[in-house]
Image (cartoon, rainbow, N blue to C red):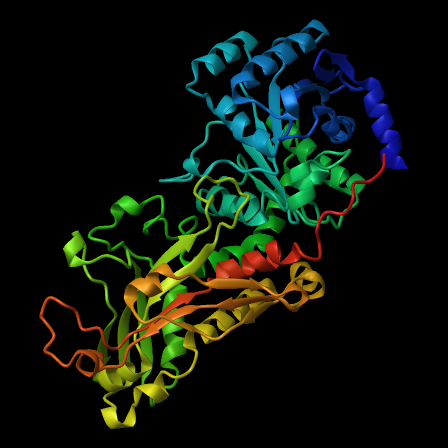
Length: 545
């Protein structure tokens, strides 16, 4: 009922002119004047943000004007964005907004993409002309349900306008792994820009709750059910937004944001750890095939770091090495690279170190990703769909590494287990462990998430067939989703046993391999935080207002 009264009050105070609306400062406001212009998301009416913005206005110490441009089809248009902002500001100035009053900008969902172009100074002539007519640069920016674009992350984070980024932990469209965790990693952890570019999570909030009214078609299809009421979500969000605006306006503020950033660091730590284990192109390993620094790869081989998880999987295959220890390293490569194509063969190498009873092995890996991730929509998985790992067989680790007689290391015994499945089970267990058994995320997933199940390895008879195959994710309903990995393995004497002719020197020895398409721990943790909840936590029917 409190929310209903607040909503009615907000709508009563709205001044509507054609498609654009604005709210003058609340009665009795005595703080410095400021304006906040808000850009809607796709297929979400501009008026649906008024309840949130009214809560912000009422909570702010500033004499805050609110401007709400409205776009055709309830979807922001980049070609019209600057012009409609200019029209909205002119309406507000005609009503009393001083031309010297600082103007801040905010946006939700798709609006965050286009607002960044406007605030950063797009090269589009139409946008530049409209901005000049508006005579108003961005004094600061708020992005909710959408992050600063990855193009601003490398070689080091750089963006010209102070920006607060906020995401809900249960946002089913702009997933928390991208909007919050990845942004936090680059803006706060690496660039130490937590004051001017803070990143904050609101636990229990979803994508829909930045607005009100009926959810959009896409929200109905993809959003997760919130754990906060709409009133609580708006109150929590307003505390962050008003503190940020006060900081920008130099009237105090910053403490609420600082505390939220610190909490967010704890929240994202498990996600970041899982992505670093993968060797993510979006976190710690941009220099890989398909990564933003792929040009640094030479002849199909990329600089370190590789995938720590691929090296861990080699340890799963090694198991007990008769008292010897294993040191496995990994490098990202193009797994299809060959001398004939201008690259190089990248094959595991085993080096025994008898002095300290250690077997060293160099392994290789290449990640694959969901279609759409490179476009940076935050809508699809950002973790690798699989890690193609070139690993060595247990048989050859024993024979070539430890020195075990061949007769005591038969291939059909040493490499009989489903090692890829065992590595996948470990990836899932690692993700669960990182999440923390007592955390809110883990308890939610245990109660309402679809578990991962694991199937036996899928044997492939040759390299091309292995490389063309992908990890299988089979939805088995309430039972869970079954993960099965393609695998290719060859015994030490593979060439001799299969071809019975001398091997030409230009053909690498095809023996000693145990290749796996691995489940990434980052994919497992993204499942725990977001996608594993979709079956049992879809957005409920829209509330009645």
